[in-house]
Length: 282
Image (cartoon, rainbow, N blue to C red):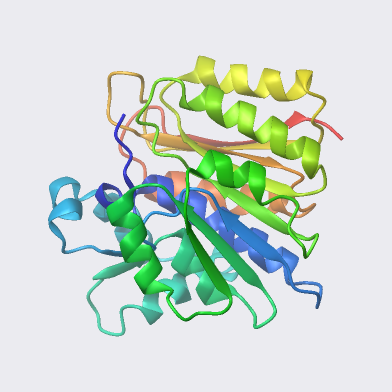
């Protein structure tokens, strides 16, 4: 699977990932003390939905485009409003032209005492990312393999924060690499919050990852899923999941509010649904 961010910006995977990321950031901001966000596979940070890359797939139309076009119940809007406001600030007119990747979304939500570390390996993408955040003293961009960044930058000096992990899934052993890197990072920083995004195309790989976490002694692991249809190894991606280690205590409840609405409005066919489950208890 080729999941280079530029081709899939604003799609159903981003809808799940960015809703979760927003709620995590706002949870950390309940305390005055600053915190660190580490995005291990940052991409270019901001995406032009009229570009050649996004035009080839048009996936944003069935993702953020659909979300913004639907009437949203007040209890869902209360939770999604900070994310949607960050999107609208980039699009002051009526047309949706730009979509914030995780770096720009995180930056829009940060306070003056919060910090963001971005690692990106693709040389062209990193050049764009570095230019985008050049001169921003709250953001550090590093040309580095995300797996090395994960091992090298935890724990952060702030001792508070979260790690977002969203690799490209271009290699067959990506789940194994993610599992190994996360277990090593957790040994160095067991109290950190880690949010892992992945496509739901290989259930066995997801189950194997969760089993490895349990064997490694990880505790307090939450599983989230959003499916707009039934996808598999040989189909387009119609669902994605996130595993959150050390989630805020309110996250599961909030996702039980958000995900049913997402599943309803984004549905593309049989198999659409959502899940919030405790993968490993405390």
